[in-house]
Image (cartoon, rainbow, N blue to C red; front, side, top):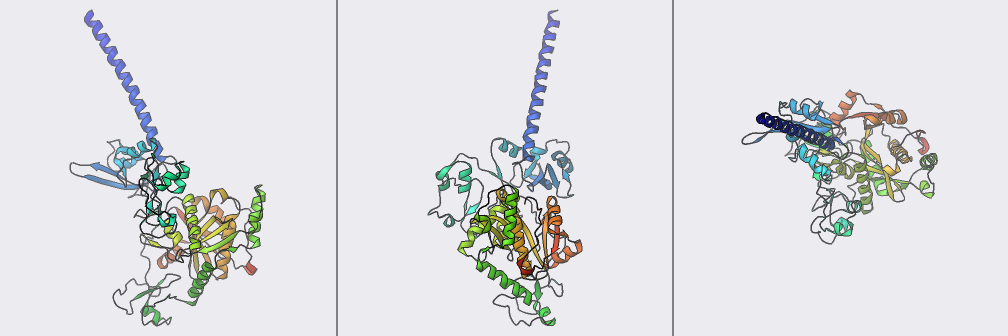
Amino acid sequence: MVIREYWMELFMLVNNVMKRKGTADAGTKKRGNFLHQSLFMPKGLPDGAELAYFVKGQKFIQKLIEGYKQGSGIVCGCCERELSPSQFEAHAGMADRRQPYRHVRTSNGLTLHDIALSLSNGQRITTDIGGDMCSICGDSGDLLFCHECCQAFHPACLNLGHLPEGDWHCANCADENGLGRKAVLGKSSRIARPIVIRLTRVVKAPEFEIGGCAICREYDFSSTTFDDRTIIFCDQCEKEFHVGCLRDSGQCDLKEVPKDKWFCCDDCKRIYGALQSSVSNGVQIIPTSFSNVIRRRHLEKGLFIDEATDCVQWCILSGKSHYPEDLPLLSSAAAIFQECFDPIVAKSGCDLIPAMVYGRSISGQEFGGMYCVVLIVRSVVVSAGLLRIFGREIAELPMVATTREHQGKGYFQALFACIERFLSSLNVESLMLPAAEEALSIWTEKFGFTKMKEQQLMNYQKQLQVTVFKGTSVLVKKVQQIPNNSVNLPDNFPSE
């Protein structure tokens, strides 16, 4: 009898322990699920973050498959399908492991589980947006990096007499975190260093070889001697030409590489001259018809109207000009693009946005012909666009953005009207741009753009370094021939 009671008590004790263990396991699983869900929530892992599934062997770690984070899943690099982390693990042939968050790693070696834990402890994720260019002047050199946002600056551009010691924060991050002047000057802070994540390249590479002589379409060239196969580039449209093909076609007979700018035709020379003249002219008051659109938008929204709406300015900027008064405007434009767009990051880990704004070459991408067009209210840049003109036939507008606080007030309409009027004055025939799915109706219904045919896009990509982003459609429209500096503006354009 005593033995029976003993076994009954032991059974009940074991049963209770197992119940408590089951409850604890369920709670742990629930907490783990919630923890990992933070990776796919706002302020979690950014879209484009490079990921790979790894297995650990006896002597090395092997990478099985690669991909990148997109939305609530992972896009596989081999089949371009969007998979859940568990499906990504199964796709790697490791379904039995059932631990995707501990085996999927980012480019810096952290597992998804590591990052989720860091996020739960208050750390934030950054995408190394500073790159190797100063956020103020756009030049490289000895740079100072913000401990919080990782943007880069020349100490001289910040008027710093010496390099700060310890953790340094830029003025924006210091203001946001209430760190005060000490942190800006370099005193140590308690804020955890952000997790730096490298994104996949979102500039869509053509599926065929680009470039080659615009006349014979051949890709060979001479690199050591000046002869018929020497390649020369037009300084405006950026097309390539063999010296021999230029002579045989009757365009020009070059005896040596030109020491100054060279243009393939009179149109390119004229367009280049007009662009340089516009850059040197600086800011201009926009036409009255454009400012009226801004006034009307303010009235529709019940916003206060003062003399500022009647003296809105615009200008064309070039990072190559190095005019001191233009540098703050270029810096403001870059900040607007980085506010409104996810980082456009090359494989090197450098953000392409500053390179595009300042017209620089970076990571195999050539943006030397890119100009920045801005709209200015009370000395503040409120809207910006990037413009590149490939000769008389076509121009591109790869990025446009308006600061969030100024959206829906007609500023972008005015900026676009200035751009179109400028293109019309140069007799440029068409304008193309990459548009995200959610913006297609705005561009097509309000501005008269249509989807560019695949063959037409392919022809442009073979000759020109047009900018196309993944997940976008390329649109095109004929540039309005604008008489008397007027332009037809859409009356019911929604918020920018």
